[in-house]
Image (tube, rainbow over all chains, first blue to last red; front, side, top):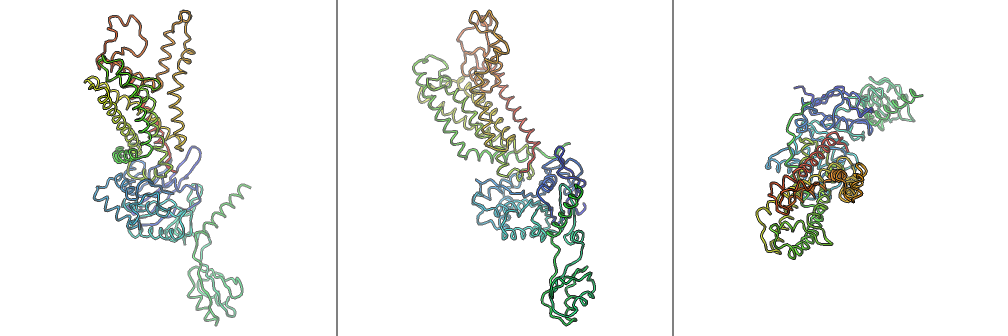
Length: 317
Length: 320
């Protein structure tokens, strides 16, 4: 078996005349954290449902761990844990009872059930409140309980749909840590979100969705190179005469721009901070600040979709 | 395209969970008390009536079920009215409730088919209704023993058990109706209102509309009108239309089973009664034969409604 756990080829979903997903192709490798990003209604959830076999595929094909979700949904669903957008639980039951119900549906033996549930609840730090009704839970706790369900299932692939939307910053951080822990267990994670900067920090690769198409696919630096014109932007704040000349001479620097008194902005083909620092010292100046702008998904996203929208507007005009 | 795996996987789990939900829900308790209290009132009237009049009747125990004393209707009539209410109460939020709690996609992402979820919910509802009906039945028999002081005979017990099964089939029809609406309508309130509306229509309005419609389809002919007699064709139409309502089917089937001297549920001519001993009770098997079309009709309606709901549910999108 190849190391790709998910392979989608020309995957298409139409509702009547409307196309929700328009022939997308992507692969996800084992142990990868793969982000599905894009605005609401771009086809992320539909794609996820097709991977799970919960909605019919209109065209193309998809293989999950070597199985076809259309023909063998039970085999696929046994290996995937799914945390839906705004997950719900039975409010009149405790967290433990909710998980026990799922465990029975999966078909674990009673002894295994107890152990798996206890372990999963401990990992998401809900052991203390495990016997409280879920109606008393906050949104963050519900999300964690959803994650506990995936842990209990021992899924090879975890699909998380908007897992951090509506969470406060601290809960979001905690949740992202738990996602990283999943990766450490060699679980493949598929993450859909519209919160870009948060997601950026955990995803190995991302796919940018727009109106049913994957517009961009790759690691964040790759996308940055593609959309932002590539290069690292290094900010230098330093005193010194003719600093521009010195900085320009640094190997790898493409351009230098003085953005203010004692402020310079370098564009380079790699991270040139050490060389830039040396250049300032050589020039006899005082280095006050030196920073590199990480390629940010927000910037990529804004730039890309603005560009695309402007293009569309031009086409329409 | 064939799918792999058993559609029954998880069925037992879903059924048990739903059953325990039903049995512990406040809704169920209210409905049970409603039925028990009205039933006791009806029984009390029936017992007083039976004591006064029919001491010689060999089927005195069955009279408990069918005798009413104004202003209360008989026990059977009350059940015919309240069983649908109970079934609707159990089923109206079966599927849309899962949608609205946002549990549906989570549950369906477990290794089970939708079949198991739907059938499990239906079976749990039916089991709940069966438990309630058996309790009611025991209550009636117990009260009868205490207040009449006559033990029921073998045939009486057999007939009342058949009645129990018919009541369950009738409950099944309404449970399937309620679940169908819970699938079709995303809002539980809408589903409940539509189901209750249908129930009121079929229980109250349809018996009045059926004769009017029959007279429209097959107007009574002049000779009958002059003599003030009902036209048999019109009557046949009336009955056929009335039988669209499961309430009518239930009432007819129960009449045949609980009144052993019932010989026909439709029109009957004097020529057909030749040689019959009027008022003599029929054996249980013969009564069953008379009620058989009605019983089959109730079971068939349940299956058709459930299958319709099943098809709609299979085609539905699970996303919230």
